[in-house]
Image 1 (cartoon, helix red, strand yellow):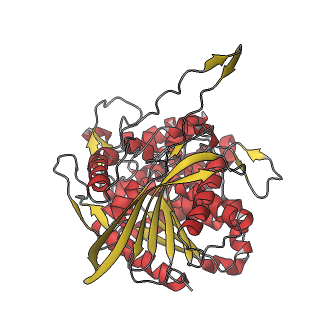
Image 2: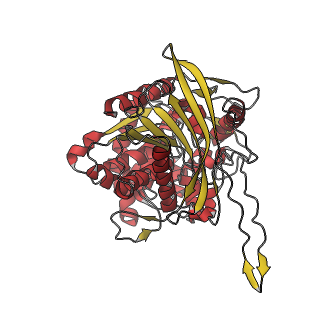
Image 3: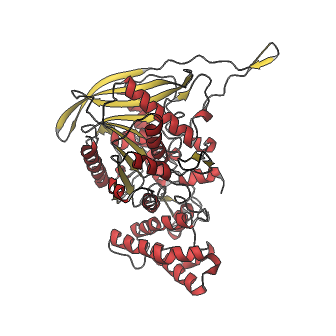
Length: 516
């Protein structure tokens, strides 16, 4: 599979859920004295807009200051390289030396932080109707009673190429668009913010969603080893952590098996099973056991599997997913998520969501092998895009002649190679940050890890995350530092009302427990 296809299929692909905005072409080179000389552009000025607000959280008033804009970032030679966009919310009347601070971002790669911002973290959020098409305005912004701002200050980060973040000076997009370059630039921004806003003494947390899992694993280690910044905790939301075992359709047995339990959860939700199990979680424990003890061993055998073993697996694949044994047989008992989502309800003319498989939509082509669009993305994105753009300009008072890039196709230009701490400086072609996280946890044994995962997420299925966490190379006593919470929702579990409350309560308790 080509790297671009792999990225699009496996890295949560939040870039799919907003219009793309491209950079203008660079000015043509000028020829001077027989040489080609690139015209140097003036360095734009970093700007911030500061506003004061009040909301009520838990029935109590909460006063906060919002700072939105950009910081000018420089390289080791003191040359300007980027304007880094962010929005920071700081509760008033607090001692910033002891007040926790959370740095947060989405994934993509190529997604701005607006999804987390307007979905669950910010003091104001988009009003969304779960499992409905939120496509007709007027769209509403409401006070967010689920924000964690009563527990910690929050800094939403837009990596270069998203939001208002741009390369400047002699820097180019390629200087930022890759696993390792991205990790380094986000770490540098965090350190710069700590100094610019006097937050060095604060208990520090990082929250990353989706591809933000790859970023967070790397940032955690990079902050510690390059900047001597130790984190109190990290929060991984529907994280992508390892390309090989976190992807289906690569002829990697672990990835194939890791997706299977979410196929079963999706079939259960849409009542595509016969007989239909009454409860989700007992059913999933049965599926997980079958996948580990029956399905995985036969896949591992390959052509050595007997006809009887193969038939037993095919019967189980049909029983647990609702997709016929004949289809699974033609697929050689392996299926990626796009084929499954197209096949599951094909007879009803319905395609199923990838980012949240509770969502469904019409099927433009009932003969197509894979899905043509993601029903979740088309149902949620218009409201988020509209409300964030309105909120940023109307309430945060941001003024810019640049477009705010919610999502961009940066994955097409992304360098997915990664130099792991244990690779002797060799760049592996596809990233895993399990080594980074293992090293960081071992070097900083007081750092805690919270993982939040939805059962109906086929961008980063919960089985892929559980597998990754189980394969961290850490001392046994450090496994107590990891907490995993599951939700009956999808990738962005916070669009589900019950999960929204649980997400807030779990995150707040995690911060409270680890802020000192």
